[in-house]
Structures are given as structure tokens and as C-alpha cells.
Amino acid sequence: MASGKTIKSRQDLPSGSGRPKRVVVKLGTNLLTGGSDALDIETIGSIFKQVSAVKATGVEVLIVTSGAVAAGRGPLSRTPGRDRLQKGTVAYRQALAALGQPQLMMTFEQLFAEFGVEIAQALISRGDLQSRARYLNVRNTLEALLSIGAVPVLNENDVVAVEELAGEVYGDNDRLSAMVANAIDADLLILLGEMEGLYTTDPNIDRTAKLIPIVSEINAAVEKTARGPHDNRGSGGMASKLDAARLAMDSGIPMVIASGRIDGVVEAICAGEKIGTRFEADVSRRESRKRWILTGRSEHRGSVAVDAGAANALQNRGNSLLPVGIVSVVGPFERGDIIEVTETDGTTIGWGLTSYPSSEVELIKGKNSKELPELLGHYYGAEVIHRNNMALR
Image (cartoon, rainbow, N blue to C red; front, side):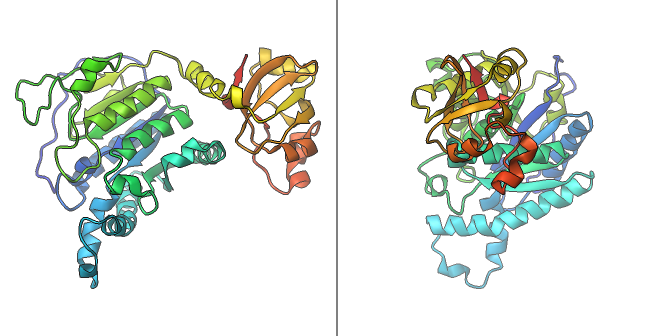
């Protein structure tokens, strides 16, 4: 182990209950490197062994990782023209990220291969999840990867997303992990780093600091406990993790901050054991998604009217909206826009994110979903609005 730190025991930790079906695990830079300039292979291997064990129980796992910049220091030291880069600049850190990303993924691939797990890389930014069209693309891709048993590995695209590298935005991967958790309807978000959780004060400078086991509301008192990063390796401190917690809680997803050096930490958290600090969500994921979609109802770009059979299927059976049930289209709207769904008399049924633009919905209305590839020349799915992307009135 590069850091020389020991794994902590959890044998005396109390147990809880409940097991999630889909988990997002975020790995911090300091955990991945042990505070050094190289990847901590022993710690990473231990966590991946746990992830593989959790997957074997039927839990789907997605990883959001930091560490590309740190992993790039080794390759940069072997590059002949390294002195041409000025340390501390955005270009310097972007170069580190570009050099380190292959190193990071090669390490991940080799370690996961030991457990027969395939990984898939995805470089995204928060903007990809804020844009509705790109949100759908990201969601569909991640859903497809999870459905085949792969472990998607996501990282902020540091080569093009300069805010974090420039120091203007801290903890992009913390917030990104919460946005991803919301996008894929995760049951649990786990942030693993060096810290064992949220403390009453910064334990790096105050020995009397006490761990806060549960947070049900992020109020002024909780905010006072947060501090920025206490070193210059990671991009986020506890403040960025509170930002992620707000996003997760608003999305109806519980979040746990814990040390990745606790023995069996991923398995234990998924088993419901009380480790680190748990942020409890006060709304269900369904309610949160409904609220998120409903925030855009006043700016919906268009609408579709559906027949009685489709209206009944949407309202009483929880079905998705298929093109066969659509009788008319009012546009224009683009793929990923929020549109209104009405009955033929204009009564509103709900709102949702459309997978197809109005020009294409006009072509496929009343048609069987099997005809879409031939009619359009492409295929975004059988549904015009998937039930997960719809909020009924």
C-alpha cells in the first residue's frame, strides 16, 4: 500500500437492515492515492473486491471516480517535454488528467478482471445531466450497461470541464455522483474517502471532534461543521460533500460518507450497518422525480393528446407512453424537452421528458413501436415518454 495506512476493523459496529438494489460509489482522490503521487493499488483492490462481492448478491453498482490528475503525475514524469508545462496552470492540470485517465482505467480494468467484472468508462460533466436531451442519453447508456452486468466508471471530463481544475468549483465529482444517482434511480449513494464521516468540527485540527452518525436536515448548524479540503490533492472537502448530500436528499436518495479504509465498508453499508454519516432522504425517489419534472411544467414546449386506452394505461397501470396511443401533436419541441400529455378533450394527464422531437412524433403517432426504426431511420426506444420520466397530474 502506497500510503502505509492500515485498514480499520468494523467488527464492533452495530447492524441495521435493508439492502439497496442499485448503488453509486464515489471514490475520492486521497483514498485512491493514499495521499501520495501514485495510485494505492492495495486499497483500490480491496474496494473492488467488495464491489464484486456486492454485485454477486444482485446489487447493481456504478462508480464515480476521482484520481485522474493524481494518476497523471507518473506518466508526466516520464514525458521528455514535461518542463514545457507551467505547474499550477489549468493547462498543466488538464495535461495531468489526460495522461492519468488511461492509467486510472487500466488499473481499474486489471483489478476488476481478477473478479470477472467488466467495466465501462464514461467521461461526463454536470452539464450533460443538466441538459435534458443529454440527460436522457446518459441515463439510457448507463441503464444499458447496468443491465448487462457491467460496472460503469464515470469521471468528470477534466480535459474540457475546466472549472474544477481552475479552482473555481470544488468537488465536482461529489456533486456529479449525486446527479448520476438521481439519473439512474439509485437506492443509495456512498462517498468514500479518507474521512470517516461528518464531524462536529474538523478532526484534522480538533481532537475533540465527534462523528455525527445521522443527518436528517442540512441546516445552519450542520453547515458550520463543513470545511474545505485540508490538502491540495483532492478537489473537494466536506463542504462539497454537503452539496452532494443536498442533491441526493432532494432526489429521495440516502447518502453515506465513510472512510474507504474500513474493512469491508462497501459490503457493510449495503447491508445496513451504521458506518460513517448517513444523510436520510425525507422524500421517496418517485416523489422527488415527480417534483423535478413538475418544475418544468410551466415551460413545457408542446403537447401530445392520447386516446382513451392510452390515458387509462398511463393513469391506472403505470405504463409508458407509446406512439400507438398518440392521436395529435402540438409543437415544436425537441428530444429531451418537457411536454404535456392530455386527453383528446384537452384534460391534462401529466408531463414528461420526450424521447423524440415533435416532427418525429408526428410521423410515428398511432404506429406500433416496432415500426419506428424503419419510419425514422434510428431508434431511441419504444416509448415516446418512459414512465420513469413522467409525472402524472
